[in-house]
Amino acid sequence: MSLDHTLSEEHEELRRTVEEFAHDVVAPKIGGFYERHEFPYEIVREMGRMGLFGLPFPEEYGGMGGDYLALCVALEELARVDSSVAITLEAGISLGAMPVFRFGTEEQKREWLPRLCAGEMLGAFGLTEPGAGSDAGGTRTTAVRDGDEWVVNGTKCFITNSGTDITGLVTVTAVTGRSESGKPLISSIIVPSGTPGFTVAPQYSKVGWNASDTRELSFADVRVPAANLLGEEGRGYAQFLRILDEGRIAIAALATGLAQGCVDQSVAYARERHAFGRAIGENQAIQFKIADMETRAHMARVGWRDAASRLVKGAPFKKEAAMAKLYSSTVAVDNARDATQIHGGYGFMNEFPVARMWRDSKILEIGEGTSEVQRMLIARELGLTG
Image (cartoon, rainbow, N blue to C red):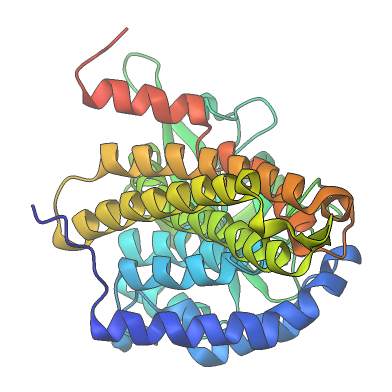
């Protein structure tokens, strides 16, 4: 397979458009939203008008007719400026709309996708539970069939985009039965926002991603139509594994954007900041640190573009997605730390973007599969078990 991951003319045009939007619209405003822990509705609406929420979906469902590579290109450019905005787009597509597109019936697609693609509505993916993080197979939320309805009971935590004013649905994984061997059968069920018994907790107090929405959800005898089953009953576990495999590429692109943003900010600061009679960028120690940061960001980009290209071409991509996510998240943390060091005391001040990037970087080693889980997946793909 060719390793030429140069962007096509169409993808490059998209990259430039999102880059301009990130710098002209997001950068001047996002700091205030971040400090107030406030969801940036006006920015999200503009992203919807641009068609960003519909990037990888067919035009017949209100999408832009692009591909997963296009989504990742947009995510990297957004994350160069701010990760809260980037994760809102990533989760809205990869976790909110993609399960409906991948596994939904034609009726479900036509009901939900047009508004999701337009950014008029956000979807969320209710997977993680207080007692079942990386062990998603330990799901305790249940859904029992009662006539023409499912009755859902349980709790989900750390769910992105689940409590905004425009959240329209949460796809919930729940145990719907047992196999002959007693193994839980997990299914995916669409729960519309506002359904009686569906409670959304207040926002978490987070270290980072403070302009994004993250909540705990509880379900107490929540009744939804039987037709809200997403895909086949008992196939929910396999479905979310596919969704997470794809999502890891998107998170890798986001992490790469943060890493590159740290380079951007450090280069600018090293040129402007003077100490001992000259710009600190003239000092070889600073030059070498930034050179290492740029190298890491570049190699992370090569990784996610390789994984995305494989996905788009229909080639196996599980291992490459795990490697891209593992490496790029590590790079994001390393570059954020180094950028903060280059900025000195100012890097500890929240009005400087690198302080936000430092706070935002750590979750990238945890969300959508921890670094330890990625290493497990890579080892398994190499034939190592146990």
